[in-house]
Length: 459
Picture (cartoon, rainbow, N blue to C red):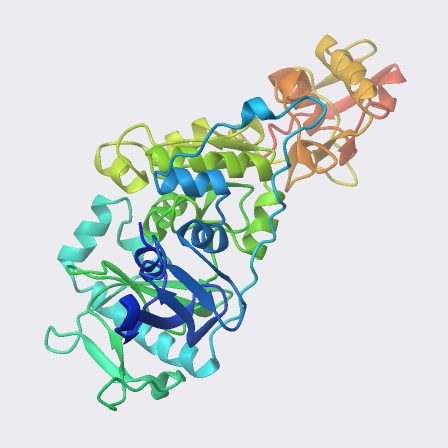
């Protein structure tokens, strides 16, 4: 695949010269601009590129490394280029070079005037979508019902009398561009499904899915390259390629948020990377093909709690939903117990009636000496062997962590077992370890308690 082919999937380029195989110019996929990025498709076997602003330059392999975050091997696999196996040249005393570190990109928001125009377009499009039964039905078939479409501000741009819109670039705060004939180039706003990216109430990007023609997806110039991260407050996330799949996932369950990275080798930006680092679980559901499977290496290298989680049928979550998959159950199956145990009630704690451990299910009773379940003592021993492990025990969060990371194994199994969970829910401490797990008051002859049911919120 030529450099020009790769570049035109990311940015819109225009031909500025026909000599020596031609030259194309346009915005740089990394640093933007309007004409600083140059591509010469015939300068070498697979073409070359150069940005006069950020200095990025190279061939098609380097393009994938610069703008898609691939390693050399991943780029060669993507381009179906065979490379020799050098594993026999690496000796134990000379280990192979480590994978280079990853620095996630940071992106600036669009200009204020662009945001204003984008807000107006989004508002009009949302009204039009609610009137378009055909598009609503198409979305519902992909797992995005009317409510979800409204919640995530999807819209429909019908154009002007069924034709695409054209506006002055200057009106959107974009620099003017003159065509070869000297006339000013207009801003193209095609008909189609409007997919805005909104963070903290600010529209950062508008992508339009056209009903026909190429490109099928079009990003309005001036948009930001921010990663789409939905339901940021959740503690687990599903990584997908398309934004529509991300919306279907986020709307189709209450446990995990979603991240759309655009392509199988797309990478999260700085904000999203930080959120994912602090999550309890990441399910990577890139398209179910060779590229999606190969990309999993990068995710495992950078995130501890990360699993390949392809959809059971079809290529992506939208396909899977259309073929009958329950997205919520599919997601739930891949999550740790801390996120999936269902709550049965609310914790009760008052100054006058402190909550005490209740080993049985009666409404009231007496806790006598030696009435601590054996499983709690087993847990105490394991916690003392692992002093960095702490059980977070609050009304908002119930989980097991070691240095901020999710803990599995026997400790997790015990904490979420019914008898131990009931004990911990009514423990007076909000952070529990091996030193304070056994309630000191249990040394008294007897303690009254009130049954409060299970706790209502899990991390």
